[in-house]
Image (cartoon, rainbow, N blue to C red; front, top):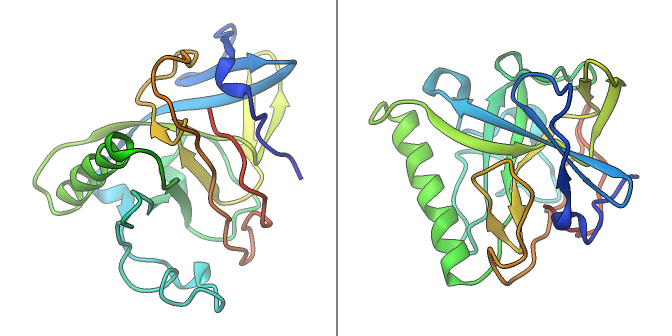
Length: 201
């Protein structure tokens, strides 16, 4: 199991020979991958697909996706619309998760993103650009030019100190003041194994 570095938010941007729209940050010899991506109404779903159902958490993994009081939410993204391949994901969808928690400002920011996504699904706005983190379940297939593959169906909105980061630049410690975690992932076929709460960046 590969975990996020607890200090990875201090990463330095590499940006050399990276695949289109993939930005690379480095800290302590580890590389972290971010994608600037436009969500569109025809490529997202706010319903939990049946293959993601987890009997341990039936209400949280079935029916419509919902916003949690701590800002946590899930969006399902058609994997064929995403620029990074996921050959071991047996669903047609990738599970895109916004980690919950943080101070009132961080939670408010996540709620604003959720409201924009629901407006997108309802046809009330155009494409929404977001920043997605591929780690920890990503493999480098080729270094130059950079080619990546997702290990499972799981990706995350980029966060640091529990706040959503809407950019691909290296994190600056004075951007916010709390800490962030990645929620445990569900485990049907192609799903990531459970992981401890770890630092995103």
